Length: 557
Image (cartoon, rainbow, N blue to C red; front, side, top):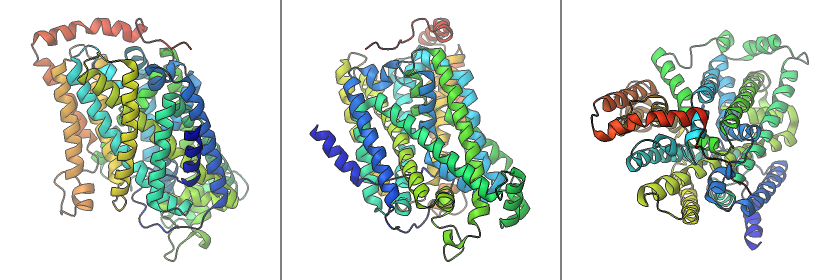
């Protein structure tokens, strides 16, 4: 119990919140604010509840399946909520509402792109992941292929995505905290890391799942309260969408342009490339794919995606309402503007400032605590996915060649969790002064170019071989990273090297094409005996894929 008393003491100090800044740019210079008492009280209540859940989960986490997949005993509805909690990052909440606040209708491109990825997951990969996999997506892509090279590549792709995502989350947490809680950046980042290590190390997937479920309920509830209250006020008590949009057009500096598409992403190639990254990148995120192993069977996996899509779609509708209501209620209200006439804290603070406008300090405190819950839930999922890639894919299956004691594997995973937590803290501190908006583009580009092509072809293309998969996977990983570095965001904006060598901000259209071509050409040119055996093994894999015969079952306790 000493550990838990000390953990609660740590938690009481860690007044943190976060935003991945996926949609918006850098938050820029943020000023430290006065301490927000309602936010602190609600935050402490959330941390106390989640640490209690972690203690409860720790008593029930005894095997590797418990640690990685919550024993496979999560229901479809619970997993749907947890997926929504894992996926609805503070970037979605603050970033998209901020984009709509600044750009109007154009800000919806991110909402639509991220949402459209979910039907792809439901119809193409949810059932296959559950039937073929055990704990990680590497289990699926190495099912009929050479274990060591395939798992090495899959784990590398997973870890790169996890670390890039973690940097965005940690930097956002530190910056947002200065606006919301009045705590210094470095303390925020350190204490987020400590809490995450506690959740994942002791509670595993079970604790992570319930942290995500609670966060999803808080976020959906908080966003609903803000959206409906602000809609009522912005439409003069009529709840008329027409009146809301009409007033937004009148008040916005952009006038009619606020309702027109095409200003945010003007180049059609850029728009297609961004859309591909958002849609297919979603299906290549390791912490999302890992959630499908927590349910007992493929039917529950499909139900998970069905519920998650509903929750996420509803949430994105709310962010649209919040963004347009913020245009009406905040643009001309001097209380929420700085000396230059800009929104205090930058565009990403539109939802938070709107909560203060419609509900005062109490609602502002609640939304601040929700933003904190959001960062914790997303980082928990990311950390567990990264730790699983290290312990299950690299340690157990690459270095130990499958000859490993289950308890030793879990111990390695817990050590990896601590290491990832420390790495996340150090990276968060190192990137404090950097504009990290490009990292999210790179994250989704890598997920869409390295992870997704390998996953989809290994499941649906009988002629794929290990050589083809390795060629395409590494090409996708290298090309997506290289194109982002040589593109306008890093080459010109970050490194200040002048004109970019690669002309587009979003490389997915090109790097995905390179990856698929690498897989196809490499596989078709592979005439080895191994390649022929892998092609012949497809039929047995497909039977398990479609029927679930031989799939992992739920653990019984």
